[in-house]
Length: 167
Image 1: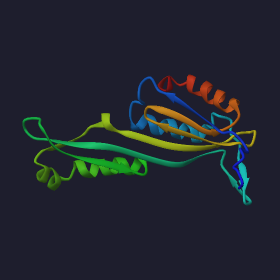
Image 2: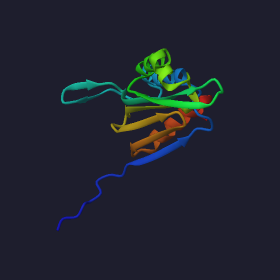
Image 3: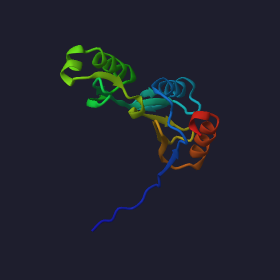
Image 4: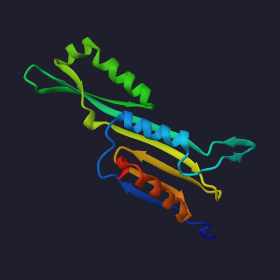
């Protein structure tokens, strides 16, 4: 019987944030800054003859809650919202908050409870040493995975140390 033999060793590292990222705008700005400025020094690479970007979003989602309260400020209902992009999340929130038929059916006034918002974006990076790795950002942590070289973790630590919201 054949055995599995380890061919390489990949690692995972997690950075728990002291405070959650403040809001959706701050989160989206952080992600877009990573994509636009490539602060980790990643390099483009080729797969099947196609040049791929040095850093790229591979997955994202945004979720939150709308709470309905009656005249006595008692919660009478809630709606959870999950969307594939920040833009669609905002559109969904606005649409639900403006829906008077839904408010009437719930028996209360809607409000967005942003303290319940969750954001997630996964970014793939290609290190200059040839490694592909994954950085998953959420509102309260950053997870680095599928890396071998400790220099990748050190580089991300240094980058995150320079951003107060990521302390």
